[in-house]
Image 1 (tube, rainbow, N blue to C red):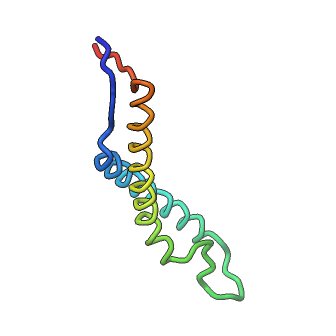
Image 2: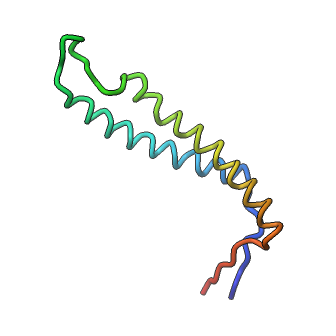
Length: 93
């Protein structure tokens, strides 16, 4: 049985991608923090991380905001194009 996806809820898609990108931001912040902590100290001080600690804390929130904005944009564009092309077909069993 083939079902057609004619539209996507803009708010729901934005919320979903915002949360997913927030989670990715946490993963990337941990990875960047670990890599940065392995950088040898220099004359500049004891904390020679590649990224500042403030950036590592803000990274998940920035990723979340970007995911939210682009999620809304993608859903809006999908709805626009699906009106012209008919949308995606899915087959469920």
